[in-house]
Amino acid sequence: MVTDTDTKVIDPEFGFMGPMAFDIGNYIGNLLLAYFSRPGWDANEQRRADYQEWLLQQIVQTWSVFTREFRQLWDNKTQGDAWPTEMYQQNRAALEDAQDQFFATLLEDSLVNAGMEMNRRIIGFAGVAELKQIENTELRAGCERRALTMARDLIVNAREPLQSSSSVQ
Image (cartoon, rainbow, N blue to C red; front, side):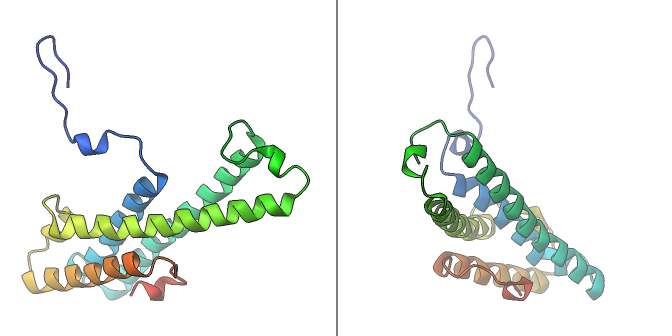
């Protein structure tokens, strides 16, 4: 916020250009927090399960679209020097291997960041309303415990990506 006489920075920790895994991880982490908070908001088991499955599908679909679009840009916009086209002109398979490795590393880093975001939003000062506003303390504690267990698993086991929605449960 800037006026003629004063300048204030709000949330400066978010005013930077950092690794992609930070933003992707925050997105994934917040969708997972919504997933784990759902028992506190919907007693109808089928409706809750449908919504939770939808949340997980958003993660899968976002990653799929992101990697497809990113790969297309990588293939067609060949300026820059991170992966010089000269290295891959004669070997398309080598380029695809480099891309696959890049995305595998990015996914791993994103999952670690998702776990850190979940921890931050549960045990840090910047709580998340989906959990904090669950009035039943036992129910809220159960939701938070499951979310924290998942967060730890994402941080510790990020190299073993989620195979299905049952991996989250």
